[in-house]
Image 1 (cartoon, rainbow, N blue to C red):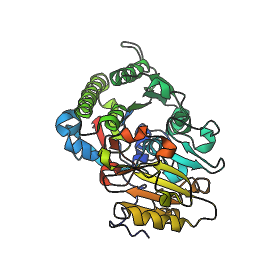
Image 2 (cartoon, rainbow, N blue to C red; image 1 turned 90 degrees about the vertical axis):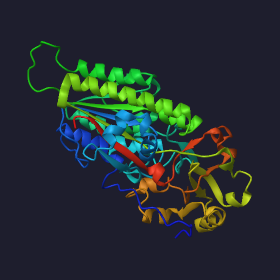
Image 3 (cartoon, helix red, strand yellow; image 1 turned 180 degrees about the horizontal axis):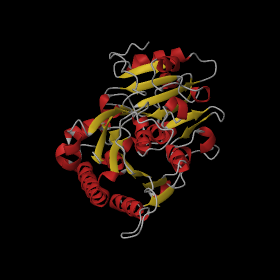
Image 4 (cartoon, rainbow, N blue to C red; image 1 turned 30 degrees about the vertical axis):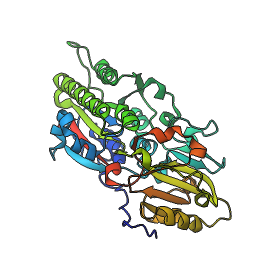
Length: 401
């Protein structure tokens, strides 16, 4: 086992208070068949899941004065809980868990850049999928949205227009209608208008029960702002205030129109930490670190190393342990699987995971600029590892409590 100065962090709580149960619990709260309400979401006819990219629980605690509406619910134990996310703490892996209800070892999106063994090259799992990677084959399980629609619910995704036909959407978030809007406020507005469109017109005679509605609403502005300016920046705080205002407006609107029929849940895919420029380290020129390494992948705070055929991964592990063992948890694949980092790992997924994993816990980020270029080193806000700030996210019941 790794000789890192810190004990290994606990494995993600995949069977308990975990992000992968949010969408399935919301569907169960609608009374749809085949879903487990693991998180105890209350029953409703309209269920909205607001996914805020990058809003860690510790960030909401630290900056609650800039999010008074969210914080007022977050402070009430009856309306909020803290969730764990999977490994790595990155958008592709977390949205896949939210969208499928599965742990990374099952859905297979086990990082930002990961190895496609059949292609012998690293592929991206977020916005730049390889043309030879079929999202439906890469992730073969049906999404929660698809399953909900098949059970008779009206289903909507409110997100940026460019995500409507993205490979990530096809892999883990397909199903139902799509409302695209580039502005945060417009996404909330379009979601509210779509909900209204599924209900009988005022004064009309309703025949039968109201249609059940499941809405997924994606907000990525905090994550983008955090990467560019940092979570301690005025720009990030202004974006948090905007989110707070829009969430309050949207929740009040649904409550006025539908009362307890409407449930609004807000959660996140990961937290974020700021990394000083001097601590963003390029290891491209350190030949000893790349000796025996065929591919590098992962993210700057959880590097995944794929060994050359015939190279003992433990030799690579020992080299990285010697270099970063006081600042990172350095595990080989077998150790990471035994530690439960990815949940139960299916055979088709196992080789996508690095032979060696370097999960930093210090305030550093590690880059292979020879592969990714120098532009990513400009990012201030970072995530990917298993620190509390990166892995803990809120789940807040904003309406329908």
